Image 1 (spheres, rainbow, N blue to C red):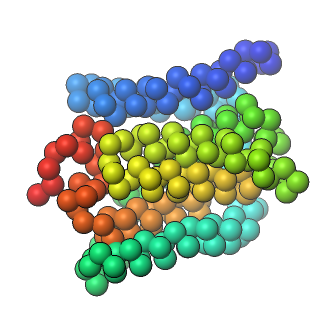
Image 2: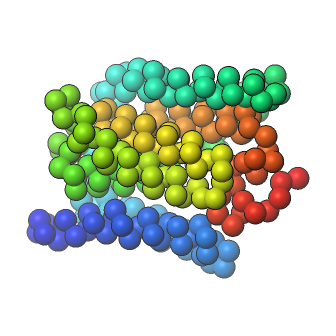
Length: 228
């Protein structure tokens, strides 16, 4: 494909798709729930046009252990912080159902996988390409893992947080978590440990903070529906 056209498609992925996602969250899902399929078609079409592979998308086994070890260190520290916060806020002593019942965790895990595909496999990959930090889908060389990775990771985390507006609990936490997960993805391009980590962190957030604060983790107009 023509290099200039590919760059324009990359810019569209990084700008227009996020705008459409926000439009769906705040407007379209209320009147045209079927419109989520446009996001699905867009994502699949982008992968095909950019000739992405399982390796570039983060669906790989060759680096699963290094990616998992790195995710455990970073996301594990976040999980510990949430547990301590929950204990300080008087959260129930029993583990949240999302963590102990597979029948409730699997659906949420699937949702987190979809989020990671959209956030990292697509959006963050395109940001890395625009910032010149990508290397054909492999982990970025260690010599370039400072400023070159933090800028696109910061923007990815910012987008992730904006999609959780106006939830006062999720806004700061998704910015921190989204930025960290984007950085982890750039270092070892694998979304499997990130999706699992996101599901665990989400369940801990639900448990650690009062429902009156996070309104069942709702975002967009749904946040204003008072929890029962």
